[in-house]
Amino acid sequence: MEYKYHSIVLEHTDVGETDRLYALYTKEAGRIMLAANGVRKPQAKLAGNLESITLVEVFAAKNRGRGRITGAIAADNFSGLKENLPAIQKVFATLKIFSRLVTQEEQDAGIFALLLDYLKAMDTSGEQEEKIEILTAGFIFKLLSGLGYGLEMKKCVSCGAMLVPSRNFFSAELGGTLCETCASRENRRVRIADETVKFIRIFFENKMENLGKLRTEESNLRNLKLVAEETVKWVAG
Ligand SMILES: [Zn+2]
Image (cartoon, rainbow, N blue to C red; front, side, top):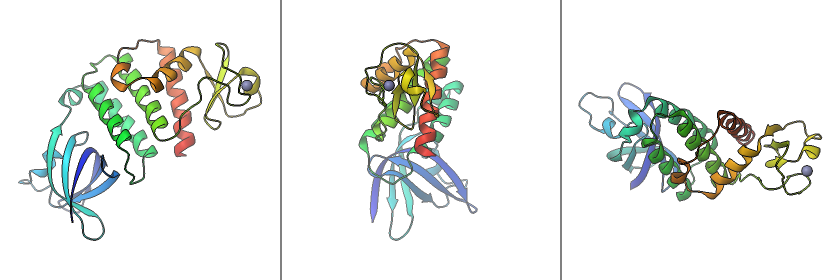
């Protein structure tokens, strides 16, 4: 059988003398692994189209066992991103988180579109750390929500009271914000600043492409990172 996949190349591992195993996130089948035979031979043209972080149409043959790549046409290699050292380093680190959260071969066009939107946003982000961090935090929170781990950011997850700006907390285990009173009874919780609550709400309610316009303080970026890490740890173990 012949298959065609709209794919984003996540990573690859060398196998044997000249082969490689590619991890792809595809529109048609979610995360898949495909082998490419002879791809490391000097005259092989396939490897150039299969660099990590490339949007590519992949053709594959599959009979039994693992599919094999027979051809690839690169549609976007995100050259702006690859020339931007702080942005590309951030994307590689983010794809590690993505791979921890997205492990199944399961079709999800929404996640595919989100990943593509993130790469496009990072392709034109510039080198400013603030923008890179906001886009990345936005992507991770939107990814968690897209995977079914939407976080409650308006009420206390324990008593149900509407959250008011004050000394609030966050519990990944309970899936959202906690008021100060309820937080005192929880062991696993972290502080969450009002600004951070506001930003996570904005992430959930806005498209990736609009997040690049946001501006914020270093302390909020650190708090966003902490809340994201707590949640990823809880979800991915
Ligand atoms: Zn409460």
